[in-house]
Amino acid sequence: MYKIAVVGDRESIFGFSAIGMDIYPAYEEEDVKKIIPKLIEDNYAIIYITENVSIKAKKYLEKLQENKIPAIVTIPSNTGNLHYGEKRIKDMVQKAVGIEINFKESNN
Image 1 (cartoon, helix red, strand yellow):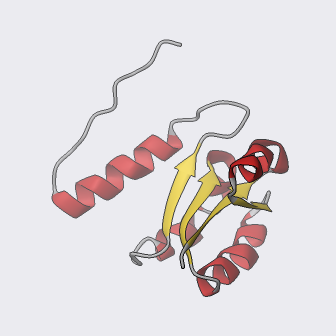
Image 2: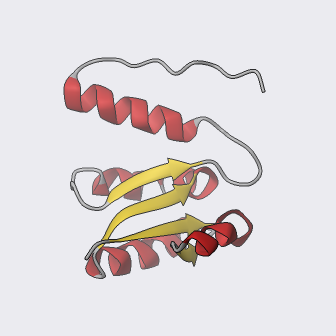
């Protein structure tokens, strides 16, 4: 059975444990390089990773993008949205289907 994990700074990911997701604190690229292979080995199908950590581990995560599983999805941290996750999704979709997508800007 596949599982879902959330990787990032403790303050941003702590709440995900309340809804049954496994959390893995990480702050630097080296943390990600230690955690992700274990998650793949343990059959995690979806790994959410906070933007601030995803940016630090960008090159490493790009190498993993070739695999269908796990899906690595970048999410905002508790400090706000950097729009990096949206850009990654846009790039992945454009690469997969050859169509550019546009996200609506929010003025919140």
